[in-house]
Length: 353
Image (tube, rainbow, N blue to C red):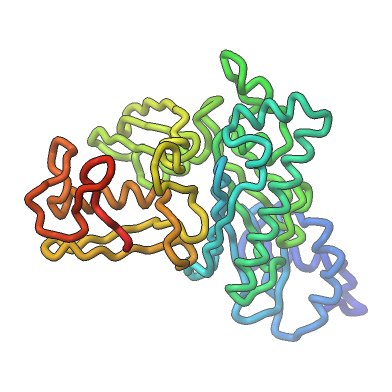
């Protein structure tokens, strides 16, 4: 604390302590931190903890022990938004939340939504507002489940296809639908959460991963990073299936990528019991290799209502593994199971009675 002999400003004393103890120089401090710094410094004799981002900026000061420090990562899909809340100190997963993208009424696909933004005077503002509201709701639900306050979330990372990225940032998406489909920007962005309307820590940032092209977004980049594809010697094929699907082929020497509209094939299009990844959708399937008993996992553990994309892939993989589907894609009629039967349109295998 300051004395008569050393009347240094609170900010100056904190910066000096960080420089002398950790060699941190030229740190900036978010103005929001300055508002609470005097009381924070004088509320304890044990010292405080400064939360520093990228060794550049003080984004929070805390007196709690242990520290409450969380981060949340969102994949903003055209159809579904999923968020993972993580403890930034232990790496523990605290909560997983998901919901339908609220922009769906303005178009099932990215082109329809881009058209809406072009045709409606306030179209972009409207769809962006819906997205931000949905993200804040999922943040509240995740924080509540984890037993923390939303303002204890000090970092948020966002990935998505290029159109969802632009709509979240409020960038004009119209030229994404016109050849040669140029995005407004491709570089990674670090933006104050409060400037985007995201209700987490007052000084927290939202980090948006870089884009590659008009229809190869940061979700594909995140997939490459998560799988380590860019470090592999072997040639590997990475497939990201969503409303907008991406395929990446290559290794540490070279990566090739492309995209396609995959949504209708995996979100209920022409599939009798197909549905979007909503509550009650079967997302995982397990089949006993000898008895052919089936165990399913549904979203939110609700009564099965249909099968979403991940459930379709899981079911097919399990049927191949159990010998129910043969190498040519047809059912193995020699299987002795009441689940394999003749239906109105041919052979079928029952997942849920």
